[in-house]
Structure formats: C-alpha cells, structure tokens
Image 1 (tube, rainbow, N blue to C red):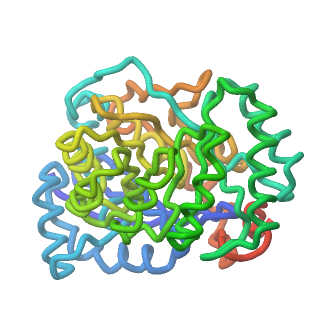
Image 2 (cartoon, helix red, strand yellow):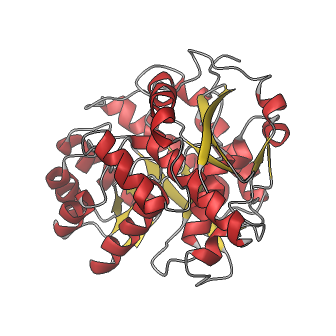
Length: 380
C-alpha cells in the first residue's frame, strides 16, 4: 500500500482552530488524524503541507518506518502535532485494513470504560456564582470530576485580594457540587515557586484531586519542590515533546501523576511510551486533551489498553453546537465514563462539506494572560 496524497483541513472552532490531516492510499483506504496546535494553527498546517511530498509513496502500514523517516527529514526533531497527526492517520489505515478497532491492535482492554473529567465548562463571566451554576449543570450530566482555572489572567504573582477571589471561586464550586465530586485545579504554568506554594497551601482545605502545572512546565526542579511543599497532588507533563523528558520529571520523587499531550509527545506511539515510562516509576497517566472530539477518540483507544491510566480529560460536552455536523462516530461521555468505538480504525468520520462552513479564524485562540480568556468567545 502507498500513500497517494496528504490533505489538510482547518475547522474554525471559535476558541481553537482544529486541524485535520487526511491520508489517501492507492487501494482506496483513507486515514484521518488530528494536528491541532495550542495557540497557533498556521505553522502546523504549513508543516503538514511541506511534508506532503515526503510522505507520498510511503507505506502507511509501516508506521514506525514513516515516523523514523519524518524525524530524520526534520533533522531529528519530533515535528510536533503535524507529525503526530500523520501518525494517527497511519494507524487509522492500519486498523481499517485489519478490520479492527484501534484499541484491539494496541493490545486490548484492561478496563470496561474510562473515567473522564470535564473541562471547558466554565464559559462566561469570572464570577463565583457563575462557576457554581455551571458546575452543577455539568455534574447533572453525570460527571464526577471537574477541572477549572480560577486564577484569571494571573502571571507570576497575585495580590492578596486576587488570591482570595480565586479561593472564593473554588469555594463556590466545592459548595455547589459537594464533597463527592473531584475538583481538579488548573494553574496553566502561571506562578513562580513562592506564589505556587502559597496558592497550593490555600487550596488544601478544598481537597482537590490535583493542582496542575503551578509553575512553568519545563522547570522540573521547581515543580517537584512545589509538590513537596503542598498537601495536594501536583500533576505536570503536558508540554512533553519527547517521552524521555518524563524521566527527569518523575525522578524528582515528588510527582507521580503526569499528563502528556498525545499531539506533543509523538502521537499514539509516543503516548504509549509515556505510559511505559510512568509505569517504571509507579506513576499514573492522565492524558492532556484540549483538542476536538477526534483527539478524544484517539486518546480513549490508547487509554483503554493501559493499566496505569488514571483519568481522561474531555472538552467535548462544552464544544460548539455544530460539532456533530462535522464529526461523527466519536465516543460520547455517559455518566462520567467513556468507551472507545468498536468500528474499524479510529472510528471517526469527518464531513468535509460541513467543515468548510467553519473556516480558520485568526482570533480563534485562548490568550490566557488576558482578561476574559475563560469566556472562550473567540470569533463568535
């Protein structure tokens, strides 16, 4: 089998431009992958288009060979989400050719379903009452875990009043959902070590499930020091561009939950490597996932096969209303849990005609150090 074409598709979700890669083959099989960036879209799309001539003629069923070839093409760099999307599309083709769901090719299930936590649900004014109201709505949908960032546009320091206001938001959510629902506090790399420790100690009374990336993600020493100084589990790892960097993070000895991003760590194979590295430290993995439901589907195929999965992030129930017009076949969260599709491949189909109705927008991003980012309004 040979790849005959690589096409890209950008779908303008108002707060993140979704990017998809489509591989066509000489025997008619089509593979889809996702290459969505964080706060950029043009670089990912451009790299995919530049790599088009390199992948045409390759055998997509030789996925490790394709990855090695692309890594060498890019002079030993990972290629980020662009290469991860190509890798996903290769796996989609492999599983379709085998007429099996991807999870089966990856080793089969170690659990019947996967617990999810909701993110993206706190759209609207940054007011404690609004956070509490939305939290109750999400819990009513069956979720038992909610993640949110109560810190507004904070960067490095917060004033005493700002700290207390952030705690007021957390207190309102805890009061609204009760003690049975887990709260996951996102800090988005905001603080220096001193502020991160002070905030973490203030959070202790609310018994959060975790405290996420309180300092810049690549400062593993500082992350571990914060984890040693607060009685709340600290999680990090979403900026991992090579799975081996998790070794240094976990070797610090104070962190035992990591959240690699499948599009950043090397795609499906990279995420499997992250699970393996975490297991060697008796650590758990809670994959980061802030893209479209396509990426949720891929994560779930991997998650279901891994014994040290903790929980899966999911934005899908807070996505735009037209999502199901563009994407079909992706798994849905039911009572806080999700299962992968049994359809051959990844199981997700993209309607290109509907996708074209939602073009790229240069304001379709969340700039998280500016007022109002949490409203997720983008170009709406």
